[in-house]
Length: 496
Image (tube, rainbow, N blue to C red):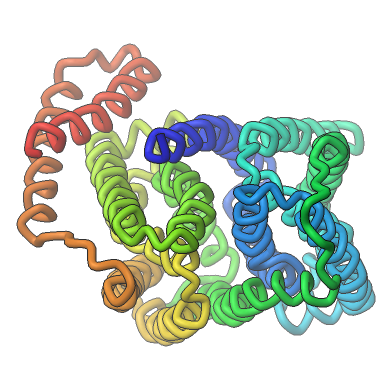
């Protein structure tokens, strides 16, 4: 039943996240049409700064609250579960208010001297409220994930994404915005309104749920102790995310300057980043939603297994997640290599993305294999190891971008090569640490077998692509995508 529940919850989250991912993908298409490649590049320069600020206010909260909520829920200790929730909420509210205020009054300096593009200052101001709403929403989501109410958070995410698109499109049309600065600002205004909507819905549902969960047989723990229980998990994750985000943000802001060093004009560099990172990688990263959904369910699941001293269940789960992530990466790779030009035309209406999509698919394949290893370390309670490994990978990425993106013959492809090298490094050092706790086996022969399965599936997919008519591009793309995933998972099942 436990295995069934894991896959059931993962399926629920996968379906909902696919819906939100598709909606988010539609949003990225709308962004690309409204902003153009240069505007999308500018939008992409602000996003890592926003992510860095979120690390200060919310990183680690979902993981920490979900782990603690899962343990309290299993023991029916709703009293201390509710006290934990209210205590951490009050603390995070005060902290996030302080961070948002400091960002607001320094937005012009951040835009001019850190991002080095003064057009970003207004966008930085409008995201300040989101720095308050997101961490509070993270606590609420962690609570829902910990007590197993995945559907609640999933439905609210879908509503938020739809509302965000409506606000963005409505703002553009109502104010007749056309210049890059105002349209980028309106995109981040829509993000803030979406996060506010998400928080209000989560808060309303949470109030109704917690009223029904009352426990009388447990004594109330000291609030400082409850706060410490959350912070001892979340702070290493926050520090991990913050340091990694600093280095990631530095890499993002460094990239256009290294491209200029390689001989490109600044606006051309932004356009190139927009095409590769904002378009091609958006396409190839869409299925990672499946992996992310499993990670959300995995963390409380592993916490329960470890609290019950059930090593076999933990080892089995780690193996299953790594295997599925690897197969999803193979499926994405062969689909992207089969119809790259078609995907570029269908999603972005551009005929110059095929080469970028092919290369992005190769880069993302290695990331699919590596990304779940960080979630597994979190689930195993190895936050400090996660911090160290993330730091190593981020520093390596920064150095490689500086070296590779400045080479004229590589330019933006240097960024992709960096992603491949850092993903392989992360996979190697994380697996070594995971095996110290979980003695799972991932034989090289099995990895090679799945690679052969991918090769056979690719050949079959090429045959299908040759048979399907060019006159029905949408149907052709849908059949190729579905067939690619079915072939890989079906053939891999036959090898068992």
